[in-house]
Amino acid sequence: MSVMQCDRGGCENIMCDRYSSLYGYLCDECFEELITSGTWNIEYFMGTPRPQVESPSLEWYEGIFNKESLNGRSQAHHCQGPQTKEEIPNLA
Ligand SMILES: [Zn+2]
Image (cartoon, rainbow, N blue to C red; front, side, top):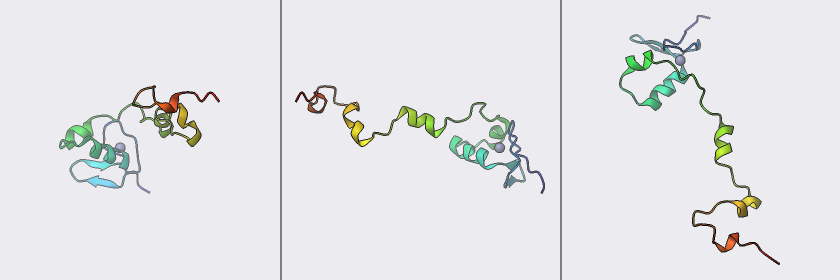
């Protein structure tokens, strides 16, 4: 199996199934990043190294936007402010 190393600067991915006769090989990860970047300047893109920092994991995002569990609802913040009926403790 031949090595098809990504020709993007700084990328060491060797499993590239994309090839341009002009720019060489590109791995899927860089390809997706290229699309995300929305650039017309392929040459510039190929010359820019991949970001040193990995993208945050799904867990990282979930840590910020907690999924509300059904019984955790009363502890959730409400955009309307704290003075809603729901938030007044039930002093039974
Ligand atoms: Zn790559």
